[in-house]
Image (cartoon, rainbow over all chains, first blue to last red; front, side, top):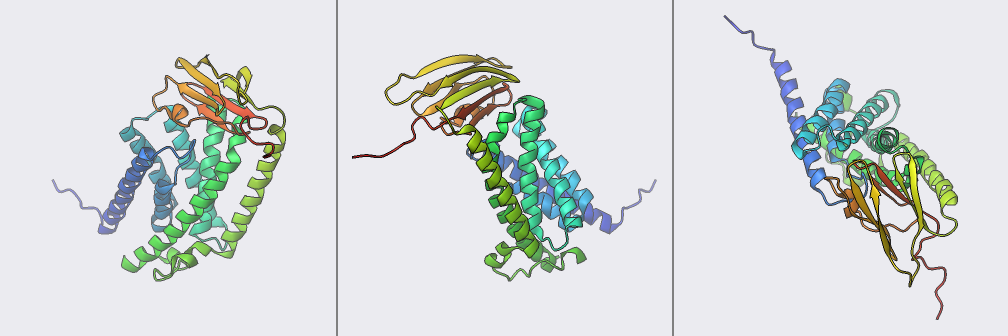
Length: 173
Length: 144
């Protein structure tokens, strides 16, 4: 019995997605191992890979990568199906959806702006998830503004990094 | 890869990449205005009066304690959460969680908090501590 070989382009697409997924999982674990930078605050490097998947491979790849990264990353750091997992998933999904919408519908936006909106969506979604599912107290939002300011900085820097990487990849691919 | 044609050349320096587009800068400006405005509104609501720590479990406000001023004794108490008992300490540095049954221990590691708007949230144990009022250790004036 002959097994039909998938087209080369399809194999290349899948292998590229898996490479990005492995990178994102590695960064997810690395960020979890970083010293505590404040409640729920992370540099957002794993989110940078979602952004790269969006520009290199399209919205569907970005969304599946965001989900896959949180599930497998949480599995490796031992937080799968814990509140931390739910909060990470909400943040990752919200960031991916908003970045996809911004990249597609906001004219004149570059990866820097897309990343900025993704970082803000990530932080907001985490707070909304905690407030609605775990600690139903609006006072939780008192801590949000300074963290959103930090998200602006990390989102902007990650966006610049994404532009650099995207430019390098398009020259080398 | 036609989607990337508007992205900069790899030879561009980081400063140019950090500038972003006009739309990016507009989005940043709007975000900053909204965040700073929200921060001012929140601070105006919670920064007045004596510094107190509020301890919540889920939707329930368990207790409100004033933060000790200089010379006042520290005190600690036990808060019952979803997973078990957590110990909260109030001293001149502010309010802190000294022990918690959660596995991550982020709440314990976050240390002491004393500024209005600071929070300690232990999500697994469903405990939230917030600080309201003027900082207990803050200076009203410096005199010689």
